[in-house]
Image (cartoon, rainbow, N blue to C red):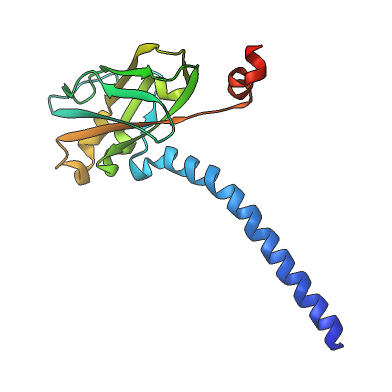
Length: 189
């Protein structure tokens, strides 16, 4: 095999390797998100279709936190500091958001739970974070989240020390094709 043939073969292998790494980098985000949702890794909460079905005598305090990312002209805060519930009991909490901009703005909330090891047991039945939220100029809304702490938490010896769980949301600006068109100068004409 000549040096030229070896160089072509090496270049083809390197190109194939680079293409594979690029493809894997695009697949990494959805794969990581799916992994976190299934395992509760990193404090990712779980989605539930119904209430727990049983309530334990053990209680847990759920604290609420809220932040807004740069570039989103909103105020966003929990309407209550905390709630103490029995494990398995359904809770209802509210967060208030207000659009400070002079145009409609769409936001989407990212969430997590701490300690992270409790994420797999924190179940949300209904939440404003499941979809984008569009607020009109100056609009203020109260947004609910219905949740419970899964009774299976009591069976996990690694969580015997958990007495407080913090549910934290950060709202980010969200601009999809529809929002971008609605907010463009030509759409106002």
